[in-house]
Length: 560
Image 1: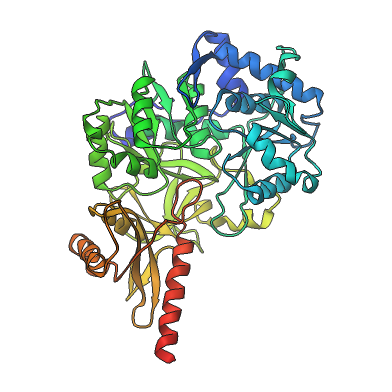
Image 2: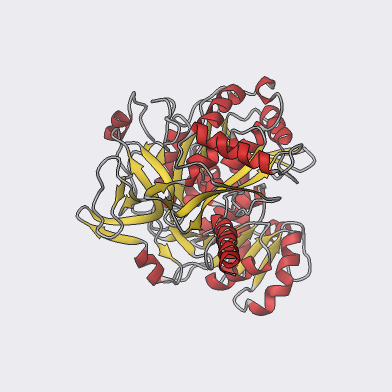
């Protein structure tokens, strides 16, 4: 645990990693608490209708032991000198999801978190690429898997939480028949535990293989982004699906490690009203709210008067702006802390309002225990203050992935050797200011080069969102013969507003008056739907394609 300090430097100087040789995530987040306080509340499982059930750590140990024994009888496990069997967990937030991940960790297997909204192609790629031997899912998951079985020869077992359906055995049926006594595999901290696939905005998703130590590596970032965990009465929730690293390793597992109860909720559809109601009903005090969720909640009229008060709110995935941070103070009574990371190396930068007020436009400082800096992507040399470069993390690091599954070339390309050692390149561009804070500029291929300027899209998007008519905004560079590229904004309007040339000009001038003349969008296009990844991030690649096609058509008309 981090020791509370008055400055980042104090917290950093007092922190030291303690990674044991042998360590198991499942034992840590479940069995350890049974030895200390078996009746302690672990999970509140909220069903779509609103009914809920509470589970203690003792309940989870019993359930995970039974499932582990049932899976082992069916041939799932880890053989000597081999990586454990890969097992997909295709479930929403619910008690069985947590139990499955815990059981698989205790078995020495590798769990594969799978998003329930994945289509057949996404599931087929992940299950085939990983060679998954089993999947734990629900009725809807079974229906998705049925047509894929002929293409998944390694998949031998499907377990369904809704009972025996078609090729699937019943979760409760096989668990109830199994013993509740199970001896966990003695895993090394460096043994594989979790295989999470990147969101795949370009090319096929790659599997980032993580070791058991990844949870310990997450703890400093989670603790500091929530103004130092744990406090008495803390209770966690996130709308982020547990199939993503943000839900699984930023919330569920760290909370259980600290003995903090987690609220599991599977909304039929996320709405601001439902989110605020859940927070009040279940007395949630700590939340990870992705920027998309925050922006939606901000649209609820009178949210600031609902009386919701949280102890901590953290957000990550896209840069937060001053408007959203100010609204968060009014709506939640707390300053939102922004953090940064990626599937391969997560929670390595964060702000912490308990130490210092966040500076809008920056994502914070390197989290104690992690060395994060801006380097030259070719030489690995650290860049001077206020100089753009690649955001990178110095290896080794407990939170860093082992490598990409079956893709040694891609793993090698992720690193660069420099004078200080080997750096993991995040693929993001950034700047370190004179006080050591890091500012995100954009992905390597998102930074816009216009008339000699290097323009990051995040700041412009944040400004656009402050306009009364704008619901969502994505910014990319549009090819331009004179400037190389010009800033193009793609905008989804709020209800009650209609596209027009006058409104486009108003939106462009709105940005021009608030940022800088070279940053305002010279092109504003209104679209019906923003292309988004399943994690709620804008797919700028799709917007760039729109801009490139438009530029090509304009050139053809001129030349025609």
